[in-house]
Image (cartoon, rainbow, N blue to C red):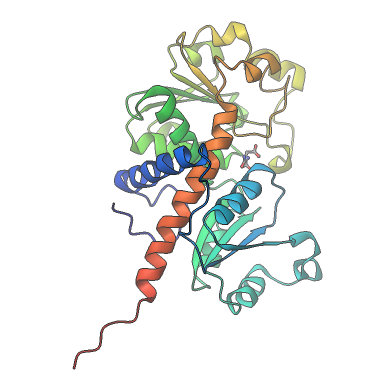
Length: 318
Ligand code: NCD
């Protein structure tokens, strides 16, 4: 196994072999999670602190379960009631926590780059659970594992990522990952929701969803990130659903065995028709959640191994 990273801040710094190492270990954890023997002690004796400065259901619960299944002492900081509300800066909060000697810090923050900055100030492993519009590496990894298990491979697939690309850290991390693994990646959405310069990222860009979905093996839908929008990016939700909402008619343009993905939370009737989301023959949305725990277990296990190796006292020459 080769994984030489100290932190998991994004997909951009990872190599193909880093990604494969995480996914291979996550596959083992995924099988274990389906058995009665869910728990192990890879993180026994280590302290994991989850700091979520933005709302989260899946990601926070999944990091907490992953840590507990691996035997870590897990603490969820209630950021809504912490001293951040009294004006303490992110760095001061981080330094305070650092003085309590955590081993793994899981951080979600509304500002792009905030988690990287924090990682420079602490001496434990930091995992990015989503920073602004920048990256959400464990989401892209769990998406990759879901795709690999459903399609039997993670290369040379035709993948459409649809909707609010401009405000999505999920899209950004997936573009890095799927590109590194040599897939054909298509971004589909209204020009107002496609970041300028996207055409230089080695992807294809479509504003006609019917064109964009053609021959896709994977259709990945995204939520409109209203909390990151500061103006009118779409005429109306009704109009948006008509042009960019995934319904049976548009999905019929993808391959007959194409899978449908969504990172959640979903807005049914806005970016996706509820019937498609619930169709167990097409939708892998629940598998994504299941793989989330396995991927987070794998990522924390690998980082903890590196942390322990770095802390091991050096042999003394006599
Ligand atoms: C995503 C996020 O927070 O970036 N959700 C998640 O982690 N499952 C996507 C979203 O909020 O739309």
